[in-house]
Amino acid sequence: MRLDRDRLLGFYIGFISRQAHRFFEQEFKPYQLGRGSLFILKKLYEKDGVHQSVLQSSIHVDKANITRVVAKLAELGYIRKEPDSVDNRANLIYLTEKAYDFKPRFEAIIRKWNDILTTELSDEEKAMLKDMLIRMCENTLDYFSEQGI
Image 1 (spheres, rainbow, N blue to C red):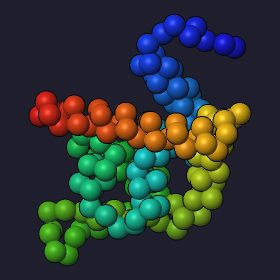
Image 2 (image 1 turned 120 degrees about the horizontal axis):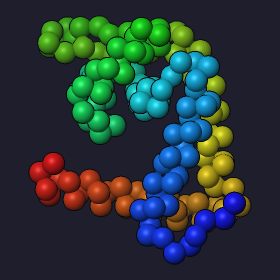
Image 3 (image 1 turned 90 degrees about the vertical axis):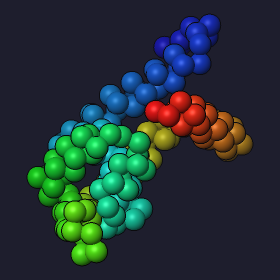
Image 4 (image 1 turned 180 degrees about the vertical axis):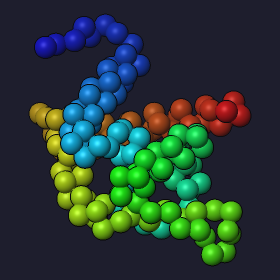
């Protein structure tokens, strides 16, 4: 299938986002994981034992969403929450053995989507695309920061 090439850039970004949602819902459904939980697991695989507020700010979601997803991941046995010994108002979030056992499958699914996205792109094109996308993300963050949002 080929798309109309006359659309604005935002259409294609949205299209890829919707396709990613479809892909990840399909791939992670057997593990009862939704899209929101993927970002949290990814961050925890990078650094385990972080404050819930750090997760919230690093994946750019609101407090209610992060609370809901953390509760679901805990219910499914992928994470555990422990009170912070320094700040008893805060929780530290840790991966469980179940999450660590799942990590190779998680990474394989993420790689599969990346491979789908970059099929027939050269290494140079992949590097340029990544740089441009990062700059576009930074542009959006700058915009909302300037707007006080």
